[in-house]
Length: 240
Image 1 (cartoon, helix red, strand yellow):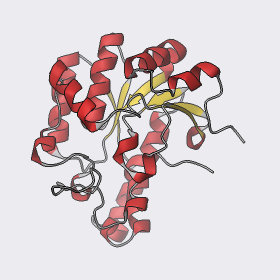
Image 2 (cartoon, one colour):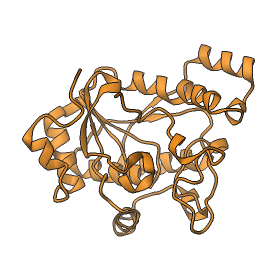
Image 3 (cartoon, one colour):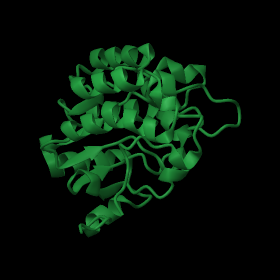
């Protein structure tokens, strides 16, 4: 079995509190070249990483999982980023046959009925497209942060992704706070999803995302009918 922690002393140093996101990204670009991509869903963290990458390389590889049920505001900020950074986004969509079967057999709202149904929908719309997006990659970059949820509190900045063949998974903002993310957006005038101004700290598919109430956890608006320990779609699962 592959190890579940970084394998070199330098990678371990990147996991330390002193390594900035830009340093982690610079290392990733030098180490993996065109074989590393950012997975972008156009939340606050992801647009920060788009901005950082655009300042480090003229042609960053960035892919988007278009589930077919994204908010219009998400498509709007995608267009803003495309124009601002003159960047091409690689778009991956669900397999048409699988999606057609799901909708025909269970209807468009099956994910409300059970956790297994919701995970089935996420698998078709997100997990399987991600596997296609990562073909040929040696690493991928995410906007995950430890502060986001109980399922991410031990998140390293660099790890081995056993779910995707042992490639490196890189989360440069792992130790950043929400305040740091928004300070960066404001100082650098980064385009961001308008839903954030309407109480959406975390944004996914439209039916599965709502605004949070004052005092609620930042992920409370994602799959709000489920308990916190279940609130992952399968994109960031870890093998034992």
